Image 1 (cartoon, one colour):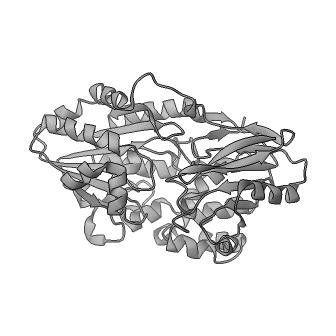
Image 2 (tube, rainbow, N blue to C red):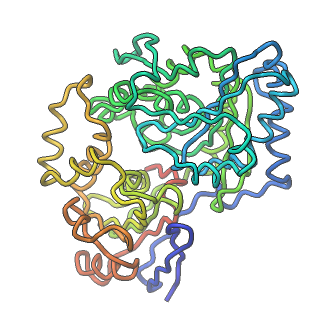
Image 3 (tube, rainbow, N blue to C red):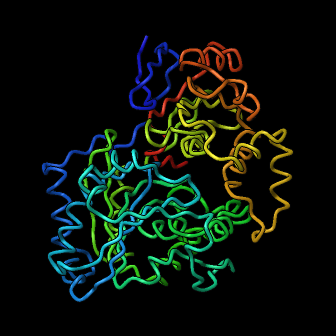
Length: 425
């Protein structure tokens, strides 16, 4: 018997599995990567050696209105470490700069004051100006231009009207944008619901290029990078994180050049050959990405690459914050997966419903794969309404899966499905 710890909320859950059933444990080498430098030193080195750009302190000279875009409560960006260093660098160039920290929420709920203190630390919350982008408040946004897809690009006023626009984030494989980080801080980060919705339309999500690890030809990425260029993001800062959400590498400088160096690093250390199994067990990497069902397709899409034609997927996701979105909840519980997909397929891009990309991806996966959701926070009846099978522990889920696939079923375990870029060879 082997015991594997599966990330869950702020801890782990044990999965007990017979050796004869365990086909493979698939983990990103990214989690094994070790730097001989401290997290702070990695951040400082990146800022001192920017890629394709002057130093941030030099860019800040003469720039009075500075907007620094950072991630919200759903992302593990280590802002407690990075923000104080970034702010110090800006003020070394212009001590009198008027700096606004703009939280990129996309279509997520607002980041609470308590979450801000946990993310940024008391000193920043007490002494800096922080604004939370609200995609549902039209007064916050201004029109910029049409995007390559034809979508209307609107963006937060604080980004459009500043003298210097800076973004920070982290890079990992992303299941429809190719990779996170860089340009995503602008779109969807600080755009209104109309712009985000159209970027995440049924047509865009359905593209074969809208997939993990793919940037070239990806219509979602192409809109995102076009939007970031139009906003003249003059400096971007990104990190890579290990399984404990610690910084293991950092890149700073030009929006595209520095991001692509980060992408190359993350691809190298996260990409691995997919291993096909009858049952695939995974998670969203624990907190903060497993806080609701809305975020959970990220890892389920990774498991899909290893689940063959009809494999069972077990997803461990605490959902301590519930479903995660009223539109998502309504759509994912509206009927069978076939009915959901048929309904969404008829919606034109400009009429895209907020959060519809999530039930769209789930419908695609659920058509082929039963999904067992391990959660101790979300009501199990709600799980059933969402076309999934509830379980309270990984072991309970595994027993359910064995009843479907047989006691000799081969099991693939991907402890953190968000960090793995599984590629079929």
